[in-house]
Image (cartoon, rainbow, N blue to C red; front, side, top):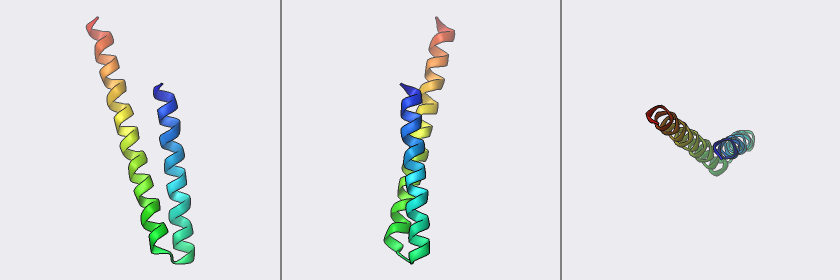
Length: 63
């Protein structure tokens, strides 16, 4: 499950980078901002997965 969520987060990051780059090339501020937002969302999703992995490791050690 965690790998699936990480793949989705990575895809969202790539989507955001492409959108931001297109905004840079065309001068479209809206695309630039939306691209950065998607990248930030991806970063948060990765952080959530990191926390889940750490919790899982702690649970395994406690057993």
